[in-house]
Length: 296
Ligand SMILES: [Fe+2]
Image (cartoon, rainbow, N blue to C red; front, side, top):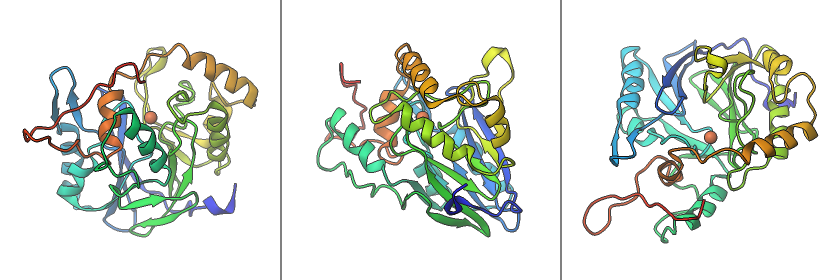
C-alpha cells in the first residue's frame, strides 16, 4: 500500500448503516471511538419524482441518531456526485453543522453537467458549494480519528474512497463481492481507470473494513453492505481472484452498454452537482428541475 494512504488501524470507528430501500443506498454515521465526534457519509434526500415532491425522512433518521447519541457532526462526506439518489447534505448541515467535503474533480463534473442542463453563470463550476475539496491523499480528522481521502475515479471523475481508521467508504468504486462493481459509462467514466482505482482500494491492508454505498441483494440474498479488502480480493466477481484489467474492461464495457439510465439520474445530477442544494427559484419564486431531451 502507498504510505500516503496509511491510517491507524487500531482506531476502529463505530459505523452505523442506514439503508434507503427507494434507491438501495446506504448512508453511514461514523463515530470516533475516542470522542463524540462523527461523520455522515452519503446521505439521501427522499423524492417522489413522478409528483415532483421532496422530503427528508431518511435524513431525519440520521439527524435523530446523531442527536440521540449526543454526537457532534464534524464532516458530511460525499464519495461522489451520485446519479441514483439526491444528497441531503445541506439539510443535515443546517440541523447539525459540520463541513461538507467532496473530491477536487467535482469541478469536472460541474463543467460537464452545467452544459448538459444549460445552467447559467450563476451556477458556479468551481466547487464553491462545498467546504472542502479533497485531493488524493488529503488527510483530515473526525475527532481523534485519522482519515484519508483516496482519489478513485472511473465510475465518475470525482469519486473518492475515504478511509477512517480501519474503515473504508468506497462509494461506487466497488459493490459487495457478489455484486462486483459499478458502471463506468457516465460522462467522464472509464472502465480501465475504474480497474486501476479498485487496485488502490485492494492495496489497503487486508483487514480494512469496507462499506458499500449501494447493495442490490443479488441472487435473492438479504441486503448487505460491509465486507473487507481480503474478501474483495478473494471473491469479488468482477475484479477478485486475479481477474485482469483486460478481462474487466471488456466485461464492464459490454455490461454497461446494456444498462438503462438510473431512474433518478436527471434530478440527482441537478441537485448533487450543487452539493445537494435545489436549483434556485425562478421569477415565480418556485424551483424547477429540468429534463434535457436526448442529452444523456
Ligand atoms: Fe454513483
